[in-house]
Length: 102
Image 1 (tube, helix red, strand yellow):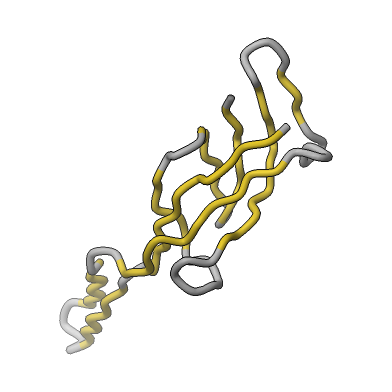
Image 2: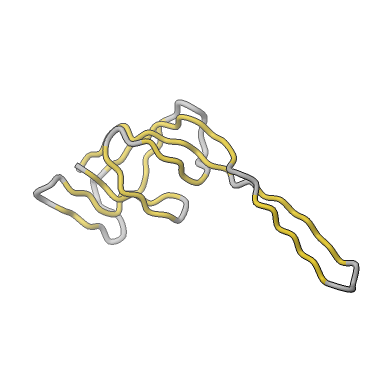
């Protein structure tokens, strides 16, 4: 059985026991979160939601929080002595899919 979930503005194809990094979710390590289900299939029957599937549930456990690699943004205008260096590290959450129910 698999499902297509949506979190952080992105969609992911997941099955039970999958681990993946998603945009930062609220909650502490060890907490369980429910995710929006857009599509669910058990091999024989596929149900697509409008926009979500009623009665379908995907539960995930938060394993870790962290930050991604640094992205450096450097703005420069020649002959104007104008320079600006800025860095950014995108926060993420690692989750493990505990159950997928139709």
